[in-house]
Length: 125
Image 1 (spheres, rainbow, N blue to C red):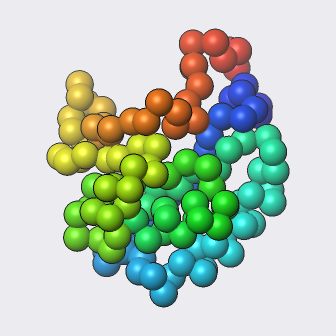
Image 2: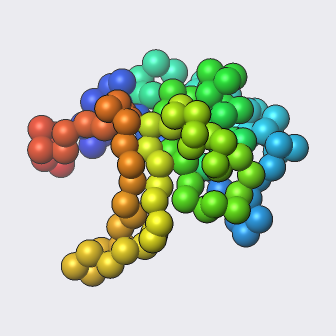
């Protein structure tokens, strides 16, 4: 809020569980964690998650997030199925950590709505 991020735009939280990723047995813990996030953010901001397919799907099913950014880690549980479902708002593509003029970036496939906002219209801090 202090930076001027518009209410209703998304804040994405990573749930990676590296190095082996989260599995179906971790979904309930992720739900508890994201329930806490939702209670703090309330209606001010939309909640997004960056994770594998089972976590993204579990949180969307429980209505604990509005946006799901799917990891590009093809070996993680549920990645292919969740991608095929089309329920993601962002889908990370390989290669990751691309050097773009000294800045590390990822190439993502994006749905029409992924919770973005225009930084050019933010007030200067």
